[in-house]
Image 1 (tube, one colour):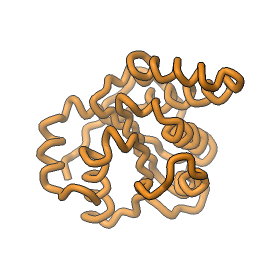
Image 2 (cartoon, rainbow, N blue to C red):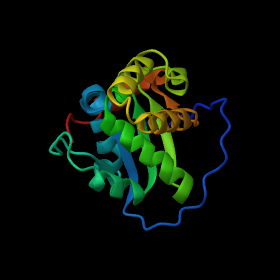
Image 3 (cartoon, rainbow, N blue to C red):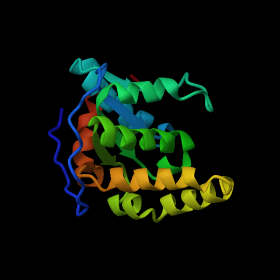
Image 4 (tube, rainbow, N blue to C red):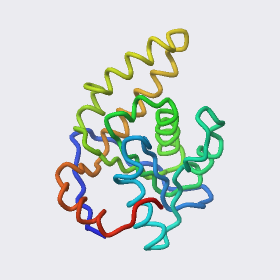
Amino acid sequence: MASMVIQTSSTSTPPPPPLNHPIKYDVFLSFRGADTRTKFTDHLYNALHVQEGIPTFRDSEELEKGEDLSQLFEAIEKSKIAVVILSSNYASSTWCLREVAKIAECRNKTGLIALPVFYEIEPTQVRSQTGSFKKYFDEHEQKYKDSTEKVDIWRKALTEIGGLSGWDLKEFAGVQRGWCAGYPEGG
């Protein structure tokens, strides 16, 4: 697997508390399937889980849209690390936003480690919610105008996770193509 270079962020956040919960997965993958499932996430899952034997959770395509997220929330709670693959349409999905809110909550309460991966998107778009993130949040504010607290929680979670040190894939596009070429499609 290609070595990972971590991009630092100008946002300073206090370190999370130590892990103090039962662990089932080393890694939880949060991603917008339409953006990254076959182009990146399946390859990452194969590298971690299949090739290296690292217990990794990713949602399956069999989970129905609108289905209860309790299975995903439980997987987040029982993970050491959450890799949040942020892409241009990540904020379009209330499913993804609920996941990232749970990840931020567990990071602060249980010490879950969160690693943002910026997939074909500027990190500042996530932190500042500009570009497609602004567009989708404007839509969410209209849709949920009677429960603005929900949208505020999602905004805060994305700002927090997007402000962490992470991996900006634009800087490693050649590495990503070469690394992904070594793994079969799917997972």
